[in-house]
Every structure is written in structure tokens, then in C-alpha cells.
Amino acid sequence: MIGYVPGRSPLHRAHPYTPLAVAAGLLFLAFAFRSPAAVWAVVVAAAVFAAAGGVLGAVLRPAAVLALPTWALLTVLHGLLGGPPHLALGPLALSAPGVERALVFGGRITAILLAFLTALVTVAPPRLVEAMTARGVPFGRIYLLVSTLTVVPRMRARVRQIIDAQQCRGLRIGGSPLARVRALGPLVVPLVLSALAEVDEQALALDVRGGSAAGRRTALAPPADHAADRLVRWTVLVGVVAVYAWKFAGAGR
Amino acid sequence: MTALVTLERVGFSYPGSARPALRDVSVAIEAGTVTGVTGLVGAGASTLLLVAGGFAPRLTGGALTGARHLATERVGIVFATPWTQLTGLASTVLGEVAFGPASLGRPREAVLAAVERAIGDLGVAHLAERDPTTLSGGELQRVVVASILAMVPDLLVLDDPAAELDPAGADALYALLPSVAARGAAVLVATPDTERLARVADRVLALEDGRLVRSGPPGAVLDDTDVARIARAAGCPAPLPLDVAAAVERVVR
Image (tube, rainbow over all chains, first blue to last red; front, side, top):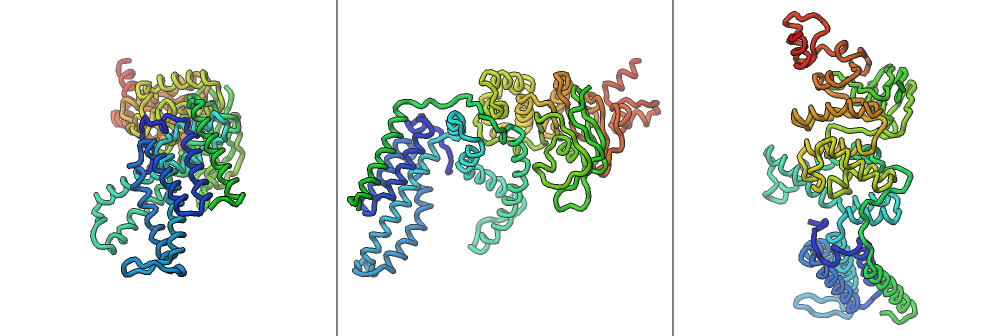
């Protein structure tokens, strides 16, 4: 499940902007460094961030599933097809500079996935809505962000319903790879059509509920923004700016 | 009485459809009244609601002919499918119902008072802390109606609002409509449930193939309820009783 997971960790209790700021900071840091060791230090920091939220186990699997294809591609592109000198690894001859590049690019992808999946599972969408409403963010932007954060769980639930319905009507989703590909049609077509059919009514419902109202929305229960939250966010900002200043000053590698 | 909506020789066609969904409809919907709309499937009842509420063609696309005058912007609409009318941005029924008035920027206390009244009227106060996505269809429909009532609309449009409700829930919902009208709102409800409609409507509009073919008090327009059919078969003189209560009253008299 890639969606909010309830909890009582410091990240769950923090102002919603704080985990998002830390995730964004880790993203900037991942791109600030060019050495594998530094990039992988950011990966470790992202893992610590997930552990602080008590969600390391919950985010490792989806992060691995999403990162593995990239890792495989990077290994082929840079490791096998890269230039000399080559390192012997059993029957394989891997390009040393290619492996270094693959470690950097793969590390960046892994750090970003860990950081943002952690933010995704620790920030409750309704609290984020309240926090953004309290800051006067227009509803259109709030909806765009929050509906993006919640789209995966919603689509998974819908897919589950369609699979159940189609299996009741005799669809088999197991078997050979060809049979599995054939089963995709009866699953994907209703998924897309039902999503499109609902869009009109939902747009109308949101419009009626003041979604397109011009004035500022009222925040009913905005989450507290403690001094510790602000300190963390300022520290992230200052840290990122300092690292980039150091990088552009020519010291970063 | 003040006409909130005036349609003069209005026609409407959906995008890509050569056949008009409404033809030459002239009607005025007045504040403080409950107006029912009935007709066979495809007669144009739902389209009349969308046009009268100002939603078509603004949100649906299509072409409107004739003249429409809508004297208010405070229009609420409820569809038969409650799950498409959730905002997806609230984790409690309270937050869901509060979404509309909060979007209008009303003060926090006014929002909470409106929410309390609406969930009380719809009998869903005990669900206030529940996650809307975990409710049954009937509970959800009552929450959706409460969400609209909390916005205190001048024009309340309902499209088969009791489709998801059990008989007691449907009775309670229809019984609420005259009190909404008594607060000064115009209520426009489309439904095939002519018996319940007969109990609460001040006026009924009957549509056939997109045309308004009859308009007047329920007793003058509706003659196809189960009770009316039985009364007709029993040789009862016009006006026919339309529901059990009216039949009992006539027998007692």
C-alpha cells in the first residue's frame, strides 16, 4: 500500500510541511553530490528519516520495487557498456567509471524514493489540506497535490473491486504470461471507463461544494506548527543552501 | 413567491448528441416550494435539474437554447451515487460536511453550527467521527445531503436522492424537504418514487421525451402510483388517492 499509514511517530505528529520539507531537502542533497559515498550517505539519511517515522519496513518494499528496474537499466547502460578501465566480476567485465556513475544515479533515485514515500505514508492528507488552507493556498493547488498523494490507494481499491467483479464473472487472472496479458483487457477497460464516468460527477460535486469559490477557505482544525517544526524546516533550508554554496564554490564532489 | 429559476422555451443537447435531451421547456421554480420532476428513464428529468441548477452546459458541455434566469448562485445538487460526491479530502464525516461551508470562507463557528444542524437533520450525528469511505451507501447518501444542506443553498436540487436509502431513510429524507423549503429554499427533486413525491411536493412536473407535458399539484399530475392504480381499478372517482395515507383518509371520510 502506497498511501498514508496512521501512526504516532514524530513525523506523524509533526506539522505536515515538516516531513515534506525534509523529503525535499533530501532530494536536493542527493543531487548536490557527485561521489557515490556522499550520495549513499544521503540514502542512509533517507532510511533514518523513514525509521524516525516508524515506516522503514513499509517504504522499503515499494522503494525497492520502483528502484530495481532503474538499477538494472543503470547496470547495463553504465556498468556493462561503459568505458575502460574494467573490473572483473566473475564472468563480467564492468566499467569502473560506469559503476561509479550507476552508483550515483541509482543512489539518487533510491534516496528520493525513500524520502518521498516516507512523507507520503506519514502525512495525513486531511491534515495537509488543513495546513495548506490555513496558509491561504488556493483550493485548486491543494486538490491537485492531495489528489495526487491519494491516487494510488484509491486506484488500488478500485482495481480490487474490478478484479473481484470480473472474477465472479469467470475471468482468470493467473496462468501463463500470455493469459495474464489477455486478462488485462477486462481489467483495464472498466478501470479507465469508470474513472472517466466519475470525473464529471465529482467535478460537479466539488464545484457545488465551493471548490471553485474565489474567497479564502476557512481552516477548521489547522495542525499546530511548533517551534521544533520550524527549526527543522529552517535547518533543512540552511543545510541545502550551504551544501549548494559549497558545491558551486568548487569544493563539492 | 419569488421565482429563483425561470426557464423560457429552453432546449438542451449534450455534446455529440443530435437528439435534444430537453425541448421547449418553460417553467418557474419558486422559493419556499418543493417541486417534483418525474418521467420515464430518458425523459429528461436529470437534465432538467442540471439546466435549472445552472450546471449544464457550464460543466457538462452541450448547447442550451431559449432563456434561463437563475436568481441565485447558492445552488446545491445531490446525485443518486453518493460515492462520487465525496471530496476525498476529509477523513471524518464532520470534515466532509464542513467542507462546503468552509470553502465559502464562513467563520469557523458558523461552519460548525451549520454542520451540527445538518448532521442532526439527516440523523447522522452519531457518524460524525467515522471515515466517510467506510459508510454504507445509505449512510453516505445522508452525509452527502447533509453536506449540501450545511451550505444553506437557496436552490436544492436532488436527483433520485433516495436510491441508496432503505424505506425508513427515504421517508425521513422526503419528510425533510418541506422543512428545507419552509426556510426559504426552492427544492427541485427528480425521482421515480411518485408516492413519496406526492406526499411532499407542492407541484409536480411530468416530462416525456424531453418535453414538459404536465405541471400542477401532485393530485392533478400523478395518477400512476400503486395506490392510485388500485383506487382506479376499484372505481374510485378522481382525484385519485396517491399514497396509503391519502387512501386511508378517504376511506375514513
